[in-house]
Amino acid sequence: MSNNSIETIQRDLLERVQTVDVPRDVLKSPELKQLYGTIATLPAEERGPFGKSLNDMKAILEQAITEREEQAESAKIVALDVTAPWDLNTHQPSLLPTTQGTQHPLTTELEVVIDIFTRMGFQAIESRQIDDDFHMFGALNFPENHPARDGYDTFRTEEGFIPPAHTSTMQHRILKNGRADLEAGTPIAAISYGRVFRNEDVDATHEHTFYQVEGVFVSKTATLGEMLGTLRSFFEAYYGQQLRIKTQPAYFPFTEPGLEFAIEKPAALGGKPGEWLEMLGCGMIHPNVLETAGIDPNEYSGFAWGGGVERLVMLKYGIEDLRHFESAKLTFLRKFA
Ligand code: DAH
Image 1 (cartoon, rainbow, N blue to C red):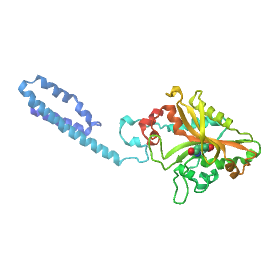
Image 2: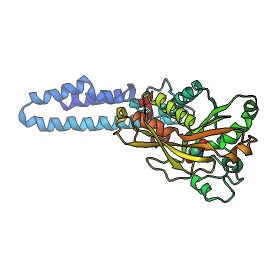
Image 3: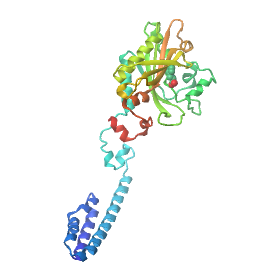
Image 4: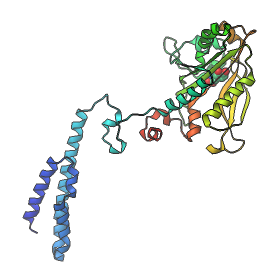
């Protein structure tokens, strides 16, 4: 084949690189394949030089293709829609399609949790994401300057507001708002769910931002036994199987007594007998907390609990790293789509 015809083909192909939609496809064009095919038909001494001229041509084409791709890319960047979901702007086909959004797995699981508790008769209210010292600590029987406050690694704004470190920040409101019903003979039964914030170093089991669910129940006759039954029913409903539970004493200024509540890790989720997982803090509501909300602790008693949502979900799905939840990684999120 003459150099002349190679040059003609090269010119054609270069022109095509400039005009087709997918310039890289030009490398797959039949003309090029045919040229490579002719190598084998040439006399031995011509193969080397001919092969080299083909490779040179391919290099020229590649360069032209890359340049065109880069141009196309920067043209897209100019047209970037900053309000679009981020993966619409990445041009990575493996991450598309994004025609349909999905709910974050924590939201979905939180809905499951809320559904179980509302079916058990609890009213569900969202927890606040900004609060004050009184609700976060004072109303919960944390004396001023008490060392127990340090355990909550609390953020504070310059004005002294607090992004709450636990959903217990809602307890006082729940009690105060439920007082009238209580006096009319209806127990207070509410959960409060939402984001909480702690000034913690982040690792596989600690996040600065996570979700909790708090439960509060008050009646004339509330007992610790009722609390354990309520919690056990919840966990059995959530994991869809019977569970063994145990408690151990714990200190919270707002409970008396205070407990840590653990479940035996279900065999279906890879647990061995005797493998206990601490799921939440709980206890009988401290008389001072009831009194601060205007409820007479001599007449009424209550129990409360609070625990992390991520932990529940991690166990259910075998998720090993808490950081996945806030990472916005589509590879993780798509597993729940
Ligand atoms: N607020 C506690 C925490 O985040 C958990 C807790 C313990 C909540 C005991 C309660 C309770 O309502 O009674 O560590």
